[in-house]
Length: 108
Image 1 (cartoon, rainbow, N blue to C red):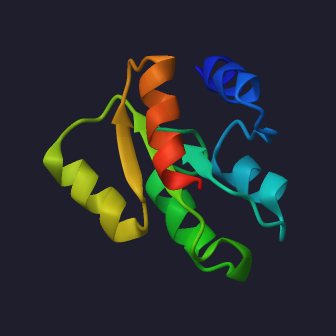
Image 2: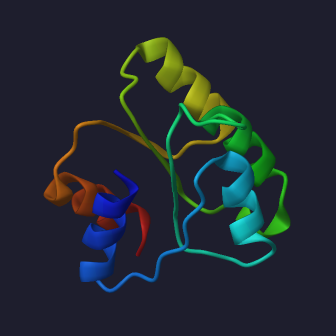
């Protein structure tokens, strides 16, 4: 899934950084500013909600759009994501066009 997302965004000209779970994602980002963060809800070591909450405490990512890309579609989970700081939510499976349409809205 990460490969498909990376390929789709690279084809659009985005530069990509990847982490295999929430902890790695935070390490990869460090203190750098990025245009968009895409995360899953269900990840090993640190789930997506915990990742977003931690990300939002960092000055470099306080206002960075965060897109949750996950198999979870329950309204309760979406509400939790929004409360944690997610900007948008896409349910898997997704198609590249839908992903790019959402990214275009989040990244000017």
